[in-house]
Image 1 (cartoon, one colour):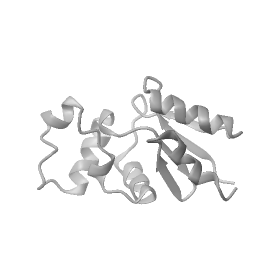
Image 2 (cartoon, one colour):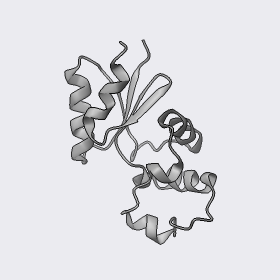
Image 3 (cartoon, helix red, strand yellow):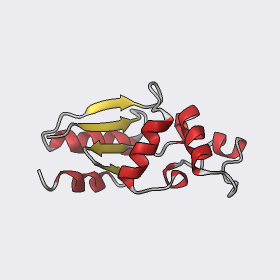
Image 4 (cartoon, helix red, strand yellow):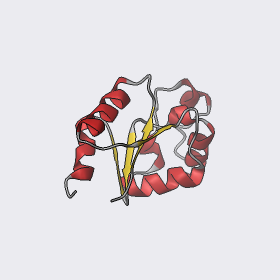
Length: 119
């Protein structure tokens, strides 16, 4: 069975709720506090593929750094947006749960349960 990984921010209520839900289902996830241990650009690209999302879909647009870096510019490439997330992990929407070749954003937390339906 693949391991469960959660990109977690303990200060975020959705992230805490998602982690609790995973644990209530008897799983012991690897917890990555992505603000302390930011994912690389390659890690972000890999997760985006698993999420079937574009970089902008995984970005927290309300963060001050989003505005400061003018990341709303439509001319920015996916690589530029991924680089911005790697350099400023606060921009990454949370929590992200990764399970093998699939991933889900825990918004709402119950959405991640779809990952484990075939177990």
